[in-house]
Image (cartoon, rainbow, N blue to C red; front, side, top):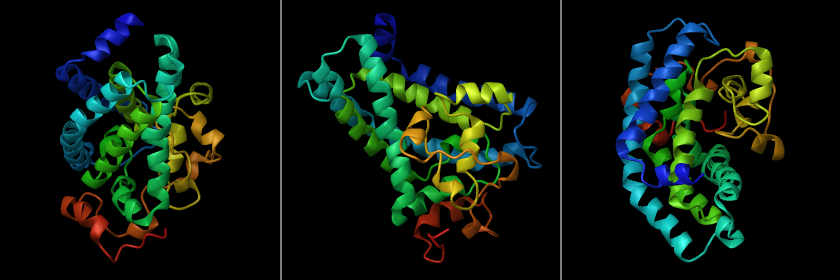
Length: 272
């Protein structure tokens, strides 16, 4: 644990970039070999708009990086937050802090985005993708990237996470988001086993169905048990799902200008 803590306390930016690029490359290759859904589309052209939003997310996260570091340092120095109050050893800090970071920094903000209409309009950009694959993981409007960065800071204060845990969480969050969005077909037994703890592509696919109630389910990013605990888990038949949003039918999901302006388009219905 000491080695892990030391590494993530000082993880180089180049290593974080490799984690992002390596995850996309790995899952891109796997989904090409064993796809969950057989798409007829230009994979590179589809990835273009998602890579643009990946770039904007990186810029916004970079802008918030100092605030996240300062928040973590403040919690440690002032003994604030759950793991600080417990004065827990490294292994317990990981066991408690990581799920709390995932709960507040991923599940909670995701749930709220589906319930508050003006936030939902930013999140619609993510759901507008009709060919969900590993590149969809980073398809977030810049406005939504700000929401998620703010909730990451809130998660740091709630958990009291030291910086090594925050960096570990963000690295796992990136890779596992790429995994659960990947168009990968797992053996049924493997999917059932993995999703007892970790969100799988089969589980998250339900969330990208184009109509309710499936769209308002399976919000988890790393851990699957939050959905079960809070009653938002759905085990719908994935063979009958359709990606996208019914209120966006007829719109071109690959039109970058349209996607950027989507949250401000008054013609778009927020009740789907």
